[in-house]
View 1 (tube, helix red, strand yellow):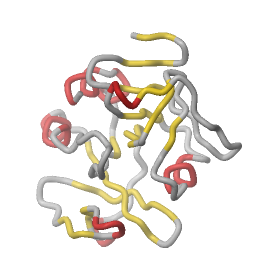
View 2 (cartoon, rainbow, N blue to C red; view 1 turned 90 degrees about the horizontal axis):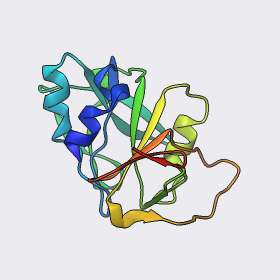
View 3 (tube, one colour; view 1 turned 180 degrees about the vertical axis):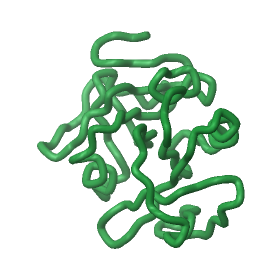
View 4 (cartoon, helix red, strand yellow; view 1 turned 135 degrees about the vertical axis):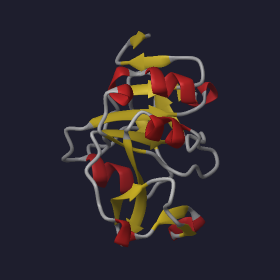
Amino acid sequence: MVDALLSLKEVASANCVMLYYAKWPEADIIPLAPLLWQKGIKTALPVVSGEDLLCIRYDADTELLPGAYDILEPQPENGTVIPDVYLVPGVAFTKEGYRLGQGGGYYDRLLKNSSAKKIGVCFGCQIAKTLPVDPWDIKMDAVVTEDAVYREKHRL
């Protein structure tokens, strides 16, 4: 999955990519971080702040501590950044880019006004034919699994 993400033009040409620390059943993409750093691409991790997510700078020297939901997070003092690519976890996705998250709405609130690329990440078994869609749900520009990339109705 890391190779598939790294091969995406959106990721390879990004200035800053927001990763995430996986919480079951999400796909682990943290091994992507050092590969991005080697290419000079900055990274960020989400930090829960009340009802919102902050995008906090993350690099090799960043201390991570358990935060909300016991997920490792950098400290807000590391500084906020504005990613141009968001890698978004989910419980399930459709090939068209709709997402079912863990139920807190954090990513929908974070992404609702963003023009950055939104790339869903999941295992192939988490691709659903359909999902319930609410008006506030944010559609992904692409969905990446361990063996496929989906953009709208096209498998690349």
